[in-house]
Length: 293
Image 1 (cartoon, rainbow, N blue to C red):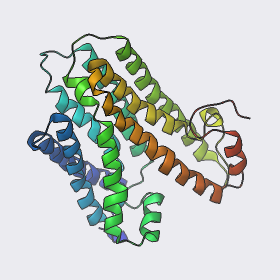
Image 2: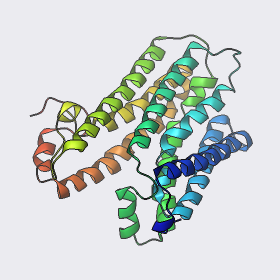
Image 3: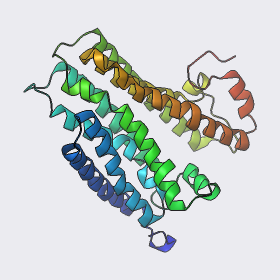
């Protein structure tokens, strides 16, 4: 399918991706059920196993962007499986809150991807850049840095889902309310930031820098929202079972991914393509909003 003449249009590409993710979800669920380890590590293993489906599709299409939707499609599947391990016959208030946050985030992020995805004729510029510049076979680049490394970070971010959904009592406390507020606020922040960027991208001039709305206060408000979403899962875990505080390593890992990889990569590209970016970056923080200097 990597031959341009055989690449389907957008509708055909979406149908292909749906098929890929049906297989990916099946592999993840099988990993959850069959992994010979505690449930939180079974989720970790199942999520990594599901990457086999996206990698096979990448080999078939020659396009690493088949993985893009994985980030938001697989965590809700893990949440559903973990909820089934709970001893409570009915959903608790905490479980409802966790699923509300997870599904709001997942639907929003997946919809944002689907709106902007043109089909299998397009591959994310970051993946193309790595394939062209790294001294490794293209298949290995798409497997390790494009798919496996992000999957490990997301799987780590999902570790708090086990104590939040399957452990602890039914009480809904202050930390649960805080986690709910942080999670919903984080996804709302991403929603507004991405919509503002979408409007800007439709009318921008070559080399113009986005510095309006939320982007006037932070260079990456959408990334801030993403980080806060994973923090909210950890707060739920703290409320349910404080002894599982260590599952915060997932949110820390994702914070590190954005701070040390994603943000520098995007900022460097903007410096190369947008002359006004340096001045914008000098007065605007990367993540934490602040009144512009």
